[in-house]
Length: 157
Length: 255
Image 1 (spheres, rainbow over the protein chains, first blue to last red):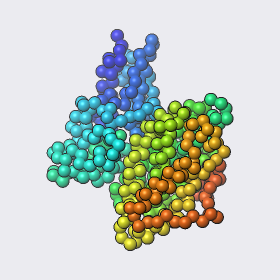
Image 2: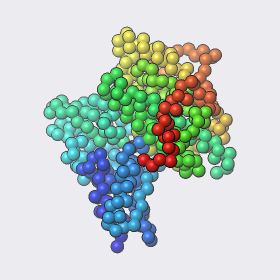
Image 3: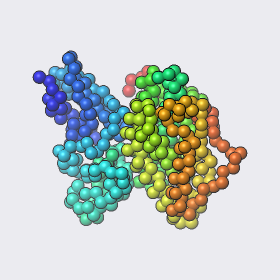
Image 4: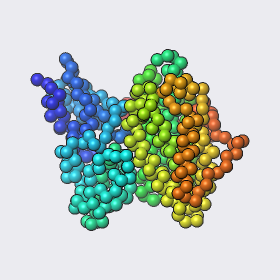
């Protein structure tokens, strides 16, 4: 039987095209799954509204559903909030393994969330924000004073 | 929704979308020529956010019966645009772009705050609640750099003061009142432009207190109004032509 849970297990295969270590489910962008009589509807909420990978993600979700013999459709909902707090524990670990610092929990004080971010290489907090903007919309750039590595962080949103 | 409210709402959504599209396009012009690499990346990244926001606003219009976002962005005459003149001006030197960024984003932050907390048009309230989370980065970036440079060398201070002298009257075009605002304010869908201008003014004053920079006197006979009604500076038409050059070759092409 098709259930919300079984769909989420299938969708674990769909990875973020820019960070292939993490699945869309663990990234928290699969915001709704509806099981209809003849069709499954999957809703995707973009991280950043201008994320260029979103259409690619939508197609990937449909392909994986199709491959698993499920008649499904994926739609993008821009009108829902996405927060980095939605990333699962497993997802945060995968980000670190990929080499990205994990986002700090979101707070009203944005500047504070960007200070002394944990280095993904040596786990020191003796780090400095270099740029709140990075090579993709969802990344900031930091430098670690202990291991001297410059690293990227998945931004707090 | 009453037809006159719907009509006004569409015009306001065009105002929001067009401001974001044009400032986004202008900011993208810093790609590859920023004064330092970090700023090159910052302006490119903010541009991408802003164009994404424009697309999301256009999508609300599509849902209200207008054409697809690409058509709305690239297939309208410049006189149909409702952006203000502040966003149309060429990027100039970095001091101008940075000062515009400050004046624009303090305005946008306050507008998004009101819309995301109060707007009675739910799709707009929901969308702005999403966008404000990204906007916080732009807002922080603008204030940090403006204050940093204003407190820098003598040359930097003079440049920032001159940029503000030029930009400030231009920035008042952000708050131009148009005929479609009144009914939307009455319906609780949007804040009045006058309210936004007042809190913006107070906030800009506060930001300047931490710098040696002073707000210039405004001469009444100079104004840059008209954008909200389709009257634009000389810079918009060439910009739209350039922006839509590829799209108009074949508007129905599939990418």
